[in-house]
Length: 131
Image (cartoon, rainbow, N blue to C red; front, side, top):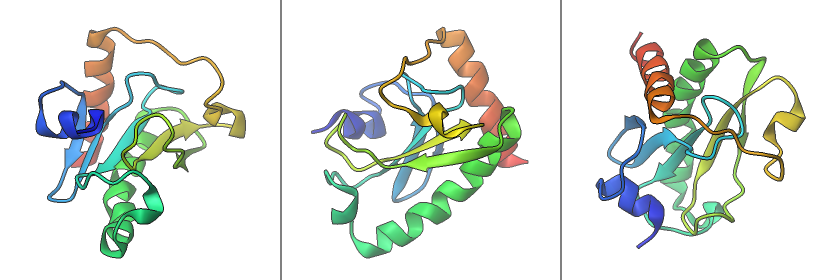
């Protein structure tokens, strides 16, 4: 069982942004930028291109309103999208508010926020998602 499956099942706490029958979105606890969100299929599959076609098609449709909410929540030119998949053997998509390409460099330093700050970030995105 992967770390992400444990998050989806609620055995590991997360800062949930959205959930559907097939997907779960939550804040990255080691973010590159404020608002960095992960989208995870509920199927435990390692590689993004091993995910069934119907999930891949729906992944972007699930991510789109979340990306719009992130963009509305933080000062950025756009929300970048990356699938790296090396950190956890469970397919996932990174949504990262960016102003330039280097804002998505995974080799760079990660940000750190208190739990109160993470809750504020979560609430900001979720409120824009529901608007």
